[in-house]
Amino acid sequence: MKTPAQQTVTFGGRFAREFREMAIPWRAEEAPDPQLLMLNEPLAIELGLDPAFLRSSEGLLLLIGSQVPSDATPVAQAYAGHQFGWYAPRLGDGRALLLGEIAHADGRLRDVHLKGSGRTPFARGGDGWAVVGPMLREYLVSEAMHALGIPTTRSLAVVATGRPVQRETVLPGAVLTRIASSHVRVGSFQYARATGDIGLVRRLAEYAITRHYPAAGETENPYFALFQSVLAAQASLVAQWMLVGFVHGVMNTDNMTISGETIDYGPCAFMEAFDPAAVYSSIDEGGRYAYGNQPVVAEWNLARLAESLLPFLHDDQEKAVELAVESLGEFRRQYSAAWSEGMLAKLGLQDGLDGDVTSPLLDDLVAVLWTGRVDYTSFFRSLGKAARGQAEPVRGLFPDPAAFDAWAERWRALSPDADAMDRVNPVYIPRNHLVEEALAAATGGDLDPLHRLLVAVTNPYDERPGLERYAAGAPEDFGTYRTFCGT
Ligand code: AMP
Ligand code: MG
Image 1 (tube, helix red, strand yellow):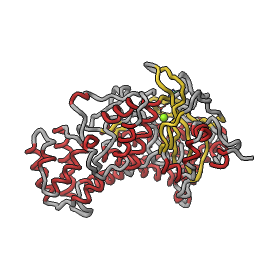
Image 2 (image 1 turned 30 degrees about the vertical axis):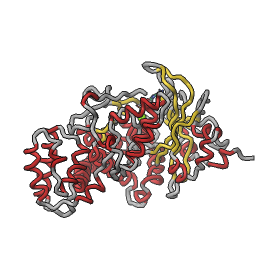
Image 3 (image 1 turned 180 degrees about the vertical axis):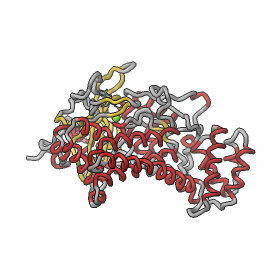
Image 4 (image 1 turned 180 degrees about the horizontal axis):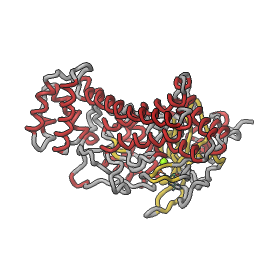
């Protein structure tokens, strides 16, 4: 007889079966007292999972991986990675497991993955646990990113385990159930390449092509086309981060997906006062992953992917290097095009305007925002009001409104479309002070502030009465915001 979990879900185990060299079968730890904190019902339904079952005690055991269908093969995945520029040959899922792949309503497969499910052979010094605050943080921010239309892993559930976990203080343990197009990372290719087994790299590339870029498989040089596809996806992704003021915080190569989805929300933050040097992560002392550095870092990470794929780009290794370099040169062009196009949309300007007019307009906008340290999100939304003739709210954001006025005159001359602006400029983002407030309450057992914040940020473009505090910047006394890793 099938258990309820088996009736509810079948996990494909393709990665586990085909990549035994980089997938260690492993089991999640039992939890002393599992309690559901968050369940993403719409996502569950898209995945063909019954929310009522997931809420049941057996459902919770499935969500934390301690009771999975007997034909499932949970694995800890191996990967390498450059962390802050330093190569670590063996990272891997130290506290995470891939349960397997399931079919989404769109017909494509998704990985079901756990974070905080206990130590694995990749745990090194770590305890294998995750705690409630940071797992809810990933849940909240990834769902906000999804609602903003930015490619990202999704969050299906957060379950408190009832296990006390030692951090700086003792905190409640939790498991995040995460959904992704796949968990193949740049670091997965680095790991495969470092084994010296060229066949493994080839198989991984083929796997990535089938799962993410089937069109690349139809080309003359599928491996090169794979690389170009990843590059295009990342150029677009990072442009979208920049356009909403998102700072990932830890863009190590193991935290960059092949699919082009944002992954591994750790010390991330949304920038308020515009500043290319904005850094929030307490461990990013050199500002390597500062807001304005993200495009450069993405390109650097893609160069690491190119190195891993080099044997397949061309039979002649000199030619392979040439191809890689030429292709990497495309990143800047593609990124800039995506950013400019997105910026023009944020300004309500239609395509096809003269670049000799729009290019300096964008450059000068960056300069006035930077000089004034203007709240990035409020600026664009208030600018929509200015497009309707109501200039005071946006002028009020500038310490020196005259600088803005000169810029705005040039902008208004191009006839911006206010309604179009409101469709692309969010009112509500997960502002750092709101996130902290919601997570502190949740850690203390009150999930209401988190639910209210989720209501705001999962419908970010639609301004609603009563939600004013979710649109406002941090209070003065919030101070310099720092986020913490290793959570
Ligand atoms: P991250 O910074 O979350 O991307 O993690 C970097 C690496 O550290 C990955 O290999 C993680 O699996 C591992 N890791 C992070 N936290 C823990 C933990 N508490 N226990 C074991 N491994 C961990
Ligand atoms: Mg990671």
